[in-house]
Length: 213
Image 1 (cartoon, rainbow, N blue to C red):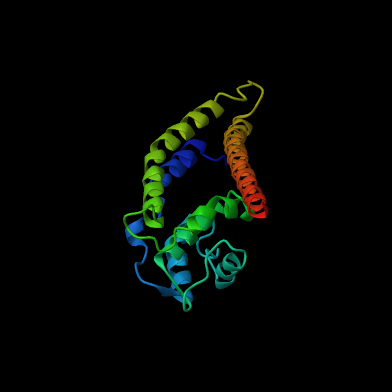
Image 2: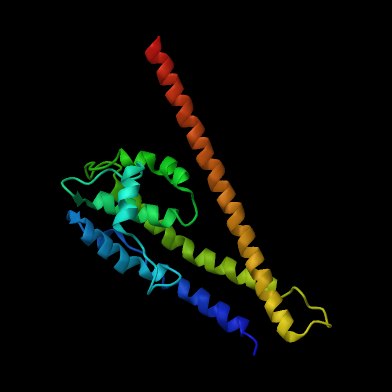
């Protein structure tokens, strides 16, 4: 029995529009204890995992490690603020693509914006803007996926290949296109983050030399 590739891909693409991301308004505006944080994260983000029923979204150990490794400011009186929640959501999505060192470099400016007033460039405003950008990007992503899939259907059209083999190779071609796309974008992100790290080191050295003088 062969896989109906068209039905499979169309079903997956259609499901992208139902990705349950967390809007700013949904993030609790009160301080939470650790158990409340993990419950919220696991409840709201479990659908983003490969195995929703068994995969752990965020555990106490993970959160403690983020704070220990300077990815997350420590809680105040064992409670986590809305800014903490924003940081945790950002870390959750970033860690699927970037290393912890890269995440630390990228979110360093965020940590200096904790508890800033509404009129400034605070974490809530940054998060809300990124949420809107993500929503705007959905349609182009879907169109790009459709084009890649259509291109994959043009491969392996040899008459001596069976229909079952051809369907399998079409999926392989489609995944190859997706892999290359992810590879290029990941490489681009890493290069940008490296530049941020180098600029930060130069600034640190410059300040050190200035202090010496």
